[in-house]
Image 1: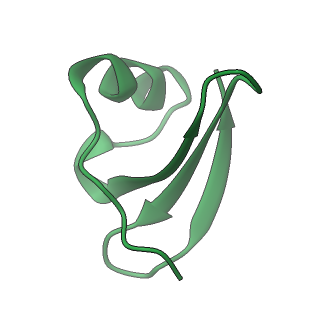
Image 2 (image 1 turned 90 degrees about the vertical axis):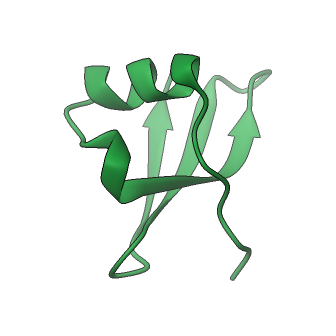
Length: 52
């Protein structure tokens, strides 16, 4: 599993719009051309894909 990076301010807005708390999620992949964010939960390691 890759290490996650802290979300930027714009990414935090997208995470909030999807109903998640941005303090609990890290960015694994930022696929702008596919309009997706791959997230990893900080504590559990659970992965999630958010449509942008």
